[in-house]
Image (cartoon, rainbow, N blue to C red; front, side, top):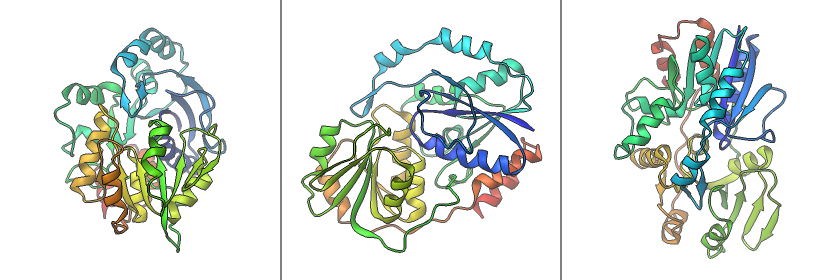
Length: 340
């Protein structure tokens, strides 16, 4: 079997999830080619697993100071380029397209009449899970952004819906020692000066702040350590820290829940998925939510204890086997196995 796998290049969560699933597919002798959209060729990926055959602009949101910029997002849309990318792609030889909420691969599949599967957190919003129902337009965008013939949505809890748990890296292990004073911070869309002012007053704690790219210089300022993104050191700090401060994406909170870390999230303003994720965290009592970089919320959160670890199985392995089985319209067995 030969698969074209589309990965949304914004953030690192899509990459983490897709890498695990691709690795499991390759272990089963599946050939997987990858395309990215929404990022440049300097995107961090594991070359031993990922084989990119294209980087495309796709459709992305413009974000500044923790919120979506609607005008700049609309201004930067390149519908003509998107169409040219889809039409010019040679899709001969592919048996299946998998899209991790990536629109170019989704449209390539539709144009060439190749079966497609959507595997991502965003597909959970096609079901009755906690979501920002006031944002009807954003919900419609979620439905039509990267459509697929068959979809597998992911969430931290099943909410009695046909979805699966998050993909956690199989090499991921908690540290036997927790540093109660160490807090991991990943707020790549926030202004650095605002983050500094937010954290600096809490001098009894050490904050390891990671940037979204490898270009950020490593600097120590009082109780704040600034780090470029590094998979190794990031996961080392995640394993030993007592808590995580981040935007309300999906993968990092999933890893924190898996490790039993307390979570403080600031959803991106106007971002349907993040506002909905924040709602789910509160419903599950798995995290605290702040609408701004709120020192009072941070002070309260720092005084809280860690959460109970939540076990998730090897979801990537089970998804890969389900893909190979070929009965993609039947997800009942896959779903029951991943939650039990």
